[in-house]
Length: 485
Image 1: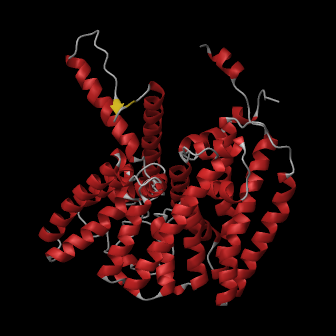
Image 2: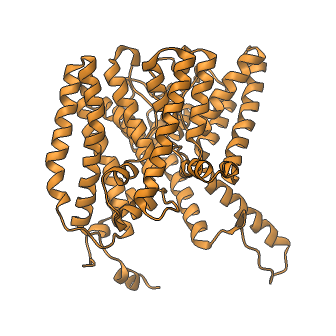
Image 3: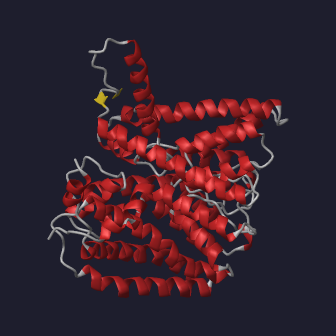
């Protein structure tokens, strides 16, 4: 189809539709922000509580008038993408204001907010232990609702049975088989809350301190990785490390599968192709890491196995916790972790990365391409994932996303190299940010150049929202052109 004809079919977004939906999501943010505001007030962090309270009030006052705009009968895909991207851009900007209450410059407060909402876990703080409990709770609370997805929470708690709600869930990769978007979102919310509570109890029983159990359970299930200790999990006992690791693994498995397994008594559904691929990838990485720790790390078999399992789950699930310092590791080990962080966890989970389902699709496409070389010219060979045929549109979207990811990695890495950062460590940090992982080779630090902090923030947002949504948001034709009524 000629470009002129294609442009004639395109429709720009309708600003009232976008503003109305964004306003509804920001009201949801206001409700969520009231939780750390009350915690800060209760714990005596006066300035932080005041700033959070001002933010809650401001969100409600500014957003309510926009919710009175007419409800649309439908929502376009470009509108849904813009709404999702706008929310993830706006939230860190707003949350940087209360985080500055603890003496952070704006760029560092914004960095922490971006890292929180995107469930990354990278931090430029010199010491997290020097900050108040209210500050630490606010950060992990952002990771918790960022992991579930603001759109899912808003649909579950505030929005009605709207076409717009379902479209938002589809855009976020959260589409389910429920009769309504709202019922589906509530199912996921129940699963998410139940796993969080179970994880909290496990960590509390093994560690004995309720606050530490709270922040680590919120950060683990959201695969966020913010810890209350400078040394991350190294400050905790082996039993507590394993409890947190188990919860991180649970967060990297598709959340709807838990509901199906429990409500329909189909426990086997938890171990579908993508879950099995996740467990296999973790097992292979853990074995390689354990071998390295035994041979080169001077660890006992028990220590090597534990540290390898913690690090393998942390990288593959994109959680970002660590039980040891990563900077001294060999380059070959860092490269293994880079590959693991790129792939990530399952779709419908809180994990980041490219997602295993896309990697499995690429493997099947490559397999069929090789088969066609030896097959007759008239043979019909189609790539399949299980019993399902992988259609051309799915293949195209995966290839486009993979190409865009490679482009973002290369450009970001190039900027780091221009600033003289060690090449492999810089690549490690860029992939960690883009995969919303949070593991650090030591590059992310308080004195990191502001432009590099900006690059990492962009990478984190691209990894969480996915680059297509941001490209649509900033494309002029998205906003200028013909519109549907």
